[in-house]
Image 1 (cartoon, rainbow, N blue to C red):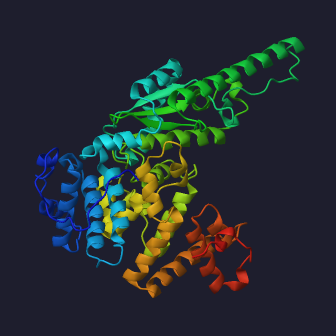
Image 2: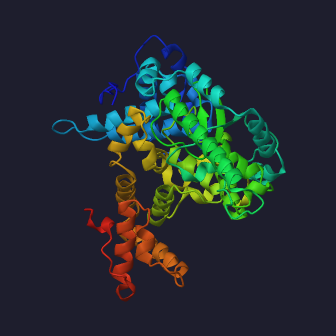
Image 3: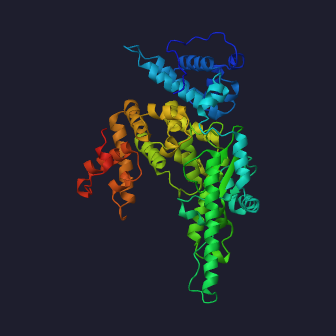
Length: 488
């Protein structure tokens, strides 16, 4: 982790320069009172206020961080964890130091550019080595203007009306740009778009004409592949090109990007050359576009930075696009949280059939599983983001501290739930959750154990499989799932 440390004993405010003059005007007591006025119950308010003051002072956090309920809740949740750490008695070697380093990671992920460590944050997280200007030049170079205009019209059209309403953006959308890029990945055969194979049985064409058509299509595809290689080099990436993504620049500007082949399949279903591509496949691509569109509207990240809230944001994008595009590990993580605590944020996206509202959503989580539970949801990170070549060091350090992944974090959620609610209560919740899954899979072709094992964090798989086998031994498939081999 970058060299930022908290002193376990530094709980008193001192005069400082830089951003401190601005940040010290933040009244922590008023911040907490504001949350209570919104219906959130807080514990240990005096110590919590002192911890919040300590973090504001230590990092010289700018007041802009507290302009939204999301920012306030996140900083107070981090302060609450800080409060619990510093209240521990000192032992040999003071193990609190490691936990406080995690607090520093959390603060930097939530507010790095708004702290006195802003320059250090930018240097340590700029792992691509590509400037905004160079990125813009790369995107400009490969943008297909006609397709871009058509995709913008489609997104702003009636097919997205219901989604905009569910997101609470039917009156005014958040500003974002759209780019369709003439690129494709060599390793991704699904991006060929509207380029089916030549019909060699077509008697209306001579063999020579068919051969020429075949070579023309092959060259078209090869051109997209070459463009894809050049684009990845220009933006400093080695990994594959996704079917769609949202790029956020250093100023927070969002751009929804999609390779031309995928955009063509969505926009032009009636063209003769699309006959090889059925409506189910097109709807799958539309769901991909909807998923990325959700990311442009009220993203649950901080400044568009990959870090705190990324799992919640992917869960949200999947929820509103029909749960069709993966992130199984995240979905199973939050199902595991629901099985252990009795609550999952999945249910809060459209509570009582109301459209999504960020403040109501965040307060719903904190109100049901507390500030520490909220922080657990914010610090969950999908595996692909941890392994990404551009993952920033604060995120990697946070994940390592959480137990080195979703499985370790979920195990911590379980331990805290047992300490808070008692083992019997947690066991009963698990029994009820497993029974619901058992009933849902009664006539399915997969076993309960197989469902728990597929795509799940290992700890969730072990909890579910062991619970099921202990209560329904005669229904077990008795398969030796790999997740059961990992020590608890």
